Length: 320
Image (cartoon, one colour):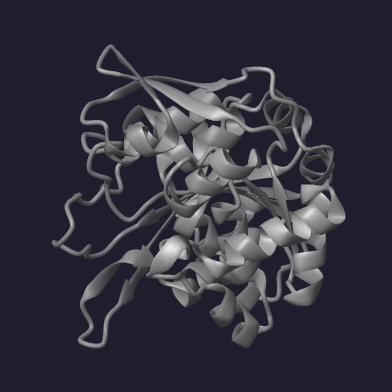
């Protein structure tokens, strides 16, 4: 894969995509949402007035070639005043205090971790995600993920939060932009609400690939299928088509809630160049599917998609 790749998203889903790209020799730039307001990130936001570090931490660790150091920074305290805090979050906060700039802190962390790529926030401004769920206004990423109902609208406060200039430059220079996997509204689309990110995507000639989740998420996307996911992404994007969509075609775990998204895009297929269908679920020691994308399987599919030149001729693709 010789393309310049930008991956947009957040949380565990983006981390899986970044690890998949890293294992295939790619050095992507991650553009990460900072709207998280729960757990360790939420506490640090409130206590120190900083952007949420948690999703940025996960992206850095996914790209790290220093697996020993990445494992250490994944440690989460379970007692005392540090209970619930991830060591990597505190590490980033300390670097940001030393550097006086969060982007500089991320670049320094990437150097220490020997990252195969760069990690950037979509904005360096503290933002709060707001949603309308079945007609009720819900504020905060954590509350939105737990809201029971259909998300009918999404916005950021402040609505004019400036985009990180380095993230905009990365999108402008990209050959391919990968969206997801990850929570549809609170990870993927949260980045697209930053005006400068939205505008950069509108001006970009990069191919756009959407990697859908393995299954629905209780609360946030409980009633949505693959067609609904793709339709929501298309509605949020400043363009009318997706060059490729990657869908899971295989078993999903029965525990933990959620159901398969399916592989039928319905009318949304008219706005998709190609669909990649594959069994992407990680397996446990007994061979049963887990609720996460398998890094090697996803890496193989992304390599096939990104290997096409142009992308619409990617090998291994199937018609929508």
